[in-house]
Image (cartoon, helix red, strand yellow):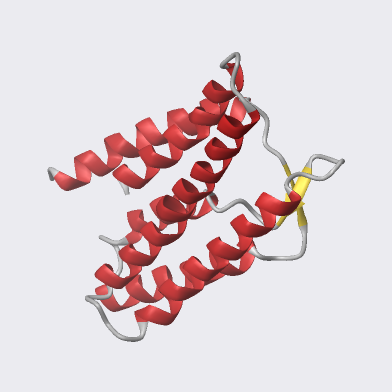
Length: 167
């Protein structure tokens, strides 16, 4: 969870940094945009899928949930790459990087639940997030202040998970 959260955090900031760089060609911007989608897919869809499969001890029933989050991630990112943000500043569904944020909270339940119950809760959360990524409702784009809030969140969760790991 720590690695995934930090990957999402760096992904949030790379766009801010890229937009401040002067003299980037349109081709460079396009490459950056495509790389951003690939990073989003790996950290926010493949990462949760791998977590689900591994936490379930590679149970065959975990694969449909893992496939759901990956497929939703691919669909969501492809749709966003084509249609982007509309004139009102909103986009379809919720962004893919919400999955690691939500899952990092769910993983805090792991020590309080039985393994079977935790895997079921994780599975349900992964599938719910997959559905929300491709949902037909519109979501507004977050402001820059959320970068700072998320930074504090990632640092705090790093502390919490570090404590859990070394306890």
